[in-house]
Image 1: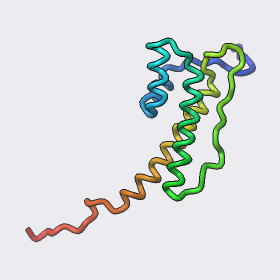
Image 2 (image 1 turned 120 degrees about the vertical axis):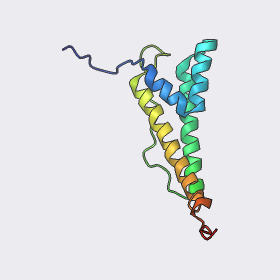
Image 3 (image 1 turned 90 degrees about the vertical axis):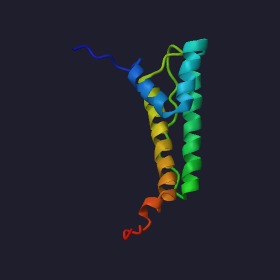
Length: 123
């Protein structure tokens, strides 16, 4: 088998669709790219930045320490508007951090839900 060395260019619609379902920002970027022909990489870079910012804000609300390993946005070499595997992974990592932070905030507020209250079983 012949393997190429160096950065690989990847067109992975399944990963992009999954990210779009998880993040309204990624979904908006894809729609603007498809409908208006806007360059995708700059919009994904901005979505990445916003996801990390939201994650940081949510971690602060949850009273948790910020993430120590923030994924940086890797700049592509070569074609400017070709999404690389490294960029997809960075976007996925940012979306995951936002989801973890969101779950910390919601799990704390759901700690004592109505379903946990004692019920009158004598009726």
